[in-house]
Image (cartoon, rainbow, N blue to C red):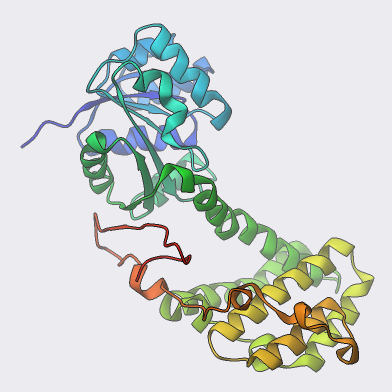
Length: 343
């Protein structure tokens, strides 16, 4: 049986703590914990049965794998401190877990010979307990030095995760998509609940009413993909209902109305992609959201993003979906000159 490498955690928040506990359970050897807050460092060190150190370079110098799980704004300065104090060496792997930043933020330690990788778990961590529960089975986005990727892929497999490899310049788009799927989903559900509260329901009642619908929709997406799961007045081409919505929303906060308008316009594109709407029908519904009189329709109002290019939109979701229970499956992607993911 191969020996698992030693590791250190720098930043004992929810992500760092969850990674540390799970890695120890998988046979990796914890050797040091550093955190700006001493109480957090001690709490994690007690869980890992290892020592607290008082400088990030000391933690890094003791380990083969170094996880910088600080806030994004502290990653670069932490890497610089480690390099300046001699806490890195050739062959060592230094990892950060930011979704938005590429591995080049770790340039100071890379210049000292260490390999650097960004390993971002595509998961929301509301608490340490949820992080430990949700991390296994999650997908990880990997980016960094080729020499280190095999070791990092082995680590992801040990965490019972799945992964894909991206380019450093694509980290902002990758993270934007994650924000939409997680953070903006929270905002979307908050928006829906707030409309129900306008009817006199409190937040708990609104969520009790909405949650079965939310869960059913997620189940449909899992079965059919996002475009195939679309139902409702846009998919039916029901302009009268949509006009009624827009009129009713005038009495609410402008943010609510603008959010509904923007989501409606985007949904018209989804409905055209799955064949529910013809281009003419899509243009008519777009004008409802834009509040353009059909008699004054301008052609550029109805040109949705997927059709402005003159290309038929293609959905690759079924080709790229990672199978449940399939540990270590990977797809690599490249950006095509024409846009989108490769077939």
